[in-house]
Each structure stands twice: as structure tokens, then as C-alpha cells.
Image (tube, rainbow over all chains, first blue to last red; front, top):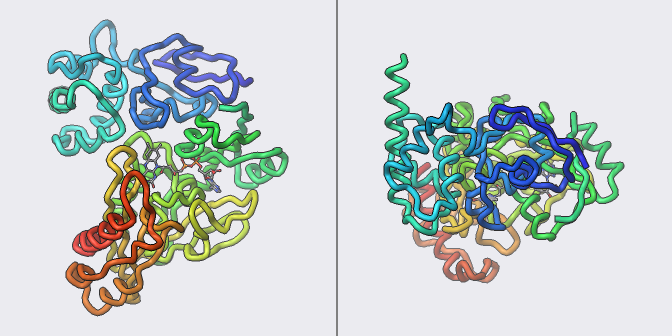
Length: 162
Length: 265
Ligand SMILES: Cc1cc2nc3c(=O)[nH]c(=O)nc-3n(C[C@H](O)[C@H](O)[C@H](O)COP(=O)(O)OP(=O)(O)OC[C@H]3O[C@@H](n4cnc5c(N)ncnc54)[C@H](O)[C@@H]3O)c2cc1C
């Protein structure tokens, strides 16, 4: 057992867990944040994507102890003051989900790709960047649309702020 | 996953010392192969020694006509490095095509080559570019490092610390990814060295891991064009055959990927 501490969605948390505990189980079971999902057993579906020190990673393929001391953000940490993050709002607006199971991972992946590409995100890049996230309902079209809309909106907000 | 004990190494020497003490330890780098393998209970190390926080094993630098990459450097860092993009764009493109963004944020070059998966991308670049692998004990050529499927020349407890790639005149990589995993069904790295020497290395297709195609190398030496390799095919005899594709299918892919890589270089 190891005491694993991290900053989770801006709050300092810690819990005593076995070294073999996956980060996703630490988040869901030790910290009771169940927005992060487990969709497969092969590291391929991306439903468990969270940000560790600002970068998207699959929390099912990382031990909680590997993230000891890190800054971790889950889908619950995106909205601020009751206001949805622009990517969350765009998924709602463009109907980028059906059953919703893959959505937390899609949104965390989308926020990460917008961080890296900014306004340069085009449809081809979005589809390429979604290679690690599997959706069984939507056929991806509305997910791609939502991400493009959010990227454009966030770029416009940034320009307006400057 | 079976029980294990995690240790975060502070330095290369510390990692080696921790390994010495462990009953049945394994080094942990990005964990993008090892953690899934442990989840499937196909590996059960008593101890995990994490190399990812060792500062000496990270980073990319230009050193005397070569690009040196620390073993704990992530695929994403290689893909987006201005040094790699400028000097060996084929290598940056290869790293940017490994798995998906989340895998590239965690996975490392040292972990990839130490694992030597026959479908991994990096081994082809190391062979085609004539890279040198440095460990905590010695330096060896890529040709000597890769010894077969999931097999390397690493001794027990030996740690890859960096990989050094001589800057080529030109190079490129083309792969046909498995649509689900993104691993190579066949990937071909072509390189022309500053000395004019041409190398063609194939990954994803060979039963014994990465291999060179000398017939393509000599054809390209006299005529660097896609047409020069279009008529050359590798024998299907020693190629992988599985649910993803037959040996004959992979043999055909090798020629197609070689043509594309030459055109892109
Ligand atoms: C969904 C998915 C898709 C992927 N797609 C691709 C792909 O398209 N192409 C591709 O090439 N790879 C792919 N990978 C694998 C990925 O590139 C891994 O990062 C890589 O194989 C292993 O690197 P790692 O740093 O994660 O190593 P780890 O998993 O931490 O370690 C792998 C092995 O190497 C040993 N090791 C690690 N570092 C060292 C070192 N410095 N010295 C000695 N031994 C060491 C470990 O003990 C272990 O046995 C994929 C993985 C996933 C999960």
C-alpha cells in the first residue's frame, strides 16, 4: 500500500491504495468521481482519458502511483461556476453523443487536441486525433462537428481577450 | 493484475540498484505495453522500477551530426521536437503516427525498442538510420541490439539510456496501420545517409522482427525513385500470417509502403 496524493480537479486529495491500483480505479473508487469510464480491457477505447499534468492519457493504462504528485483533471473538472466548458457545450449543441458512455473520454481528448492545435484544427486532423477513442453509436460525424465548433469558438474567445 | 511494488528511480544508478534488490523486477517507462500486459496477467513482476522521472534519460539534442534522444522521451516529444522535425523529419512523422495521442503522451522510445514488438514502428527507423543504442553499460549498433521477435541484446537489469540517430540526407517512413490498434501491419523506413548509403528496413511484417531489404537498397542506390522498388517484392516465407492479414498480403504491403516512403522522402 502507498499513500497516493495528487491535485485532482484543483483539489488536493490522497488515499492509501495498493500499488497495482490503476489511476482510473483510484479516481472512480477512492475519489468517487465516476465520470471517467472503463470501456475496454485493451487500452484502445479511450473512455477513460483524463489529463495528467495537462496531457491526455488513458487512466486505465497507468497506475495511480505513477501519478503520485501530479496534477490530474477529469471531465468533472472542466466546467467552472456551473458554466459548461465550451467543448461540453458544443457536444450538447451539436448532439455529439447518444448513449454517452464514450463522451467523457471524447471530451477530454477534444480539450487536449484543441490545446495542441488551437484554431488550426481541421476535420482531417480531428478524425486522426480521435484514433484512440471509440464510439459505438454516433458514427463520429457530430463528435467531429462539435470539436470543430468548440475549437473555432475558443479561438475567437482568445482573440477577443487579446 | 497481480500484486506489485512500485519504486520511482531518481537516477540511472538508483534504478539499477533497485533492480538488483528486486526479486523479479521490471523497469517501467511509459507503461503502454507493460501495464496492459500486467492487466492481462501475462506479466507479474514483483517490483516495478519507474524510469520516467530520471532527468538524465529525457530530452533531445543535436550532437556532432546526430540527434540524441533520451530513452524516457515520449513519442509526442519526438514528434513535436523542432530539432527532429528539422534534421530527421521522417523520424518525427513516425513518432507522430504511433498509436493515438494518449499513447504518445506516455509511451517512450526506450520502452518501445526494449520491448521490440515485431509490429512496433521505431525498430525500422533505428535500423534504416544506423542508430546507436546506449545503455548504462555500453553502446551498440541497432543491428546488434535487435535480436528477434520481442528479443534484444539487453542483459538482465541493463537499462537503455539513449538512442543516437546520424542525420541522413533524406528519409521517410510509411506504414499501413492495423485499423484497430494502429500498430504496423507493414511499415517501411527508407533512408539515404550523408555518405550516400541507402537502407530500407521493414517492420510489422517479419516473423523475426525488423529486417532489411537489400535488393531494394541496391535498386535505390542507383535510382532513388518509387519506380525502382515497384517491381521488387519480398518473399512471403518468413512473414507474419495472422487474423489481420496473410503473409502474401503483407509481402504486397511491403512493396507498396516502400514506394510511398521513397516518394515521401
Ligand atoms: C492502444 C495502443 C496503441 C499502440 N500503437 C502502437 C503503434 O502504432 N506503434 C508502436 O510502435 N507502438 C504502439 N504502441 C506501443 C507503445 O508505443 C509503447 O509506448 C511502447 O511499446 C512501449 O513503450 P513504453 O515506454 O510504454 O514502455 P513500457 O510499457 O513501460 O515497457 C515496455 C518494456 O520495456 C522495458 N523497458 C522500458 N524502458 C526500458 C529501458 N529504458 N531500458 C530497458 N528496458 C526498458 C520494460 O521493462 C518492459 O518490459 C501502442 C500501445 C497502445 C496501448
